[in-house]
Amino acid sequence: MAKRPLILVTNDDGITAPGLRTLISVMHKLGDVVVVAPDSPQSAMGHAITINSTLHLEKVTIDGKQPEYSCSGTPADCVKLAVNEILDRRPDICVSGINHGSNSSINVIYSGTMSAALEAGIEGIPAIGFSLLDYNWNANFEHCKSFVEIITREVLSHGLADGVVLNVNIPNLEKKAIKGVKVCRQARANWKEEFDKRTNPMGREYYWLTGKFVNMDNGEDTDEWALANGYVSVVPVQFDLTAHHTIRSINTWKLND
Image (tube, rainbow, N blue to C red; front, top):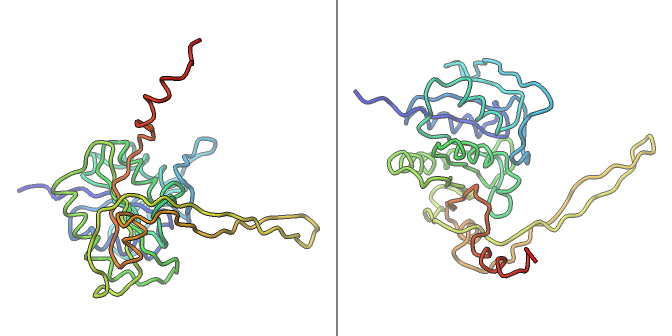
């Protein structure tokens, strides 16, 4: 009898987050699940890892089922600990999320959700980061389930190219209003940031980061276009940040004179 796939589940919103609980419930249909997630929210941590302090793991039972692992570190730490200390074999897939909020376009750079998936990719494990375009802690994730299951099944069936993971974003719409799934490129967009400067009662200045998301990309093949038009976006991303297309040009510079 064939072994069920071993599925590593993690996130950046913390081990009690409703999005993670939804993801776990779907993964139990597909394989044997091991959960290693942060013990507190780690949003926008990017690919941070813990090197100047200790890490702690605690076995917890949240849904009255099998024990899970709560980690004091970052999402990337969770994957590293899972692979090196917890699991007795390499996972067949790592899924991260379901994030409370968008990780489309430039947000992928800051995302703890996607950094966990990328860390798995670095380890040679097929990986997917899932996000819902709803920042509400009590967001309804029901309409995400079928898309999460289908996309995960396909990755388990076909695998992913070496060094590639998937960034999946799901619109905050009723399931019947979602038109389907589109494989896209990352939109060229960024945050126009501002700092709200204030003074506390002790007279010390402090800042709140604020900003506005600006999409400068009019293409109809982007994740932002897909999401704005009622599609689930799937963007293949890679951790090789080399700008291969510009190597030839830079090699014409007089760098060795």
